[in-house]
Image 1: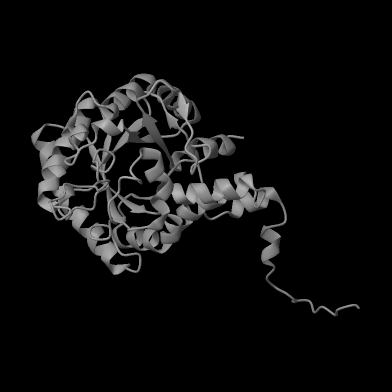
Image 2: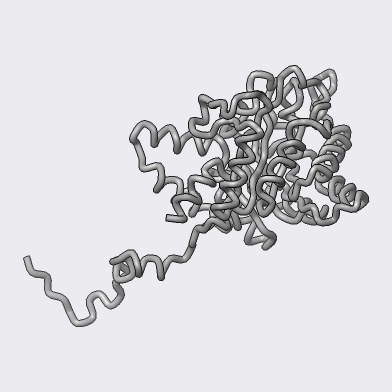
Length: 334
């Protein structure tokens, strides 16, 4: 059947700007680049170069030597920063998370190894107690199992100072204790480390998507109860803006939303409301879903990785913390 077309039907043809790769690239509104990536990695203190984590296939725990090699690769690929998370010997864990304050512990040694191997790559460290406590919570608890806010702040401040002394470029309080950004900023200024930046986990939700990460750092079996009394309720959005505003007032340089993909609306609201550098964390559960689906042949992993990371940028994120960061950087460099 022949369709009669008038001279102005249709006047607008959006497909003109989709017909070839060159024009799609020219018209693309959101561009993902290597500069937008932060590599999340779990480090361990054992002799094995890599230890596979069943729930995070392809994202093993790395030894310090392998971490240094990853740093060198990140530097060669142009990835700006690495975020380090520790899996320590369970015998070092205690009720107060004392190992978090050990200047010879795993994290400060990891920071020093990265700075030596890849001096042009920034190093970000988590400020929280959960990898170091025998109960798996992010803070000090009392006999009733209640996480104590103000008592935790003292330990977080000491942890931040110790890691700044080790050479960390960015400290990232992920604990969601009230007032922790202000306490850490004041302590860094007093200690004459004004250039150490704070990336605040401003909106960290009590999410089901952290499960594989807890496997990776060895806290899942130890965790007693849940974290709903200090991490945010997944149903709340205005609260995220209040949290971000408080952290900015207390001296945060950058803001982070965690998890990522299920909270793109939060990323957008935070960036639109404050304009501060805003990041998203593509967390372990998001990583595991993409990787497992790809291993089962249910989706194209490379396309899914780039598409998901682009979605963060489209929502307003200035960058993304991801276990896929080095893989994505290789894909973007093709």
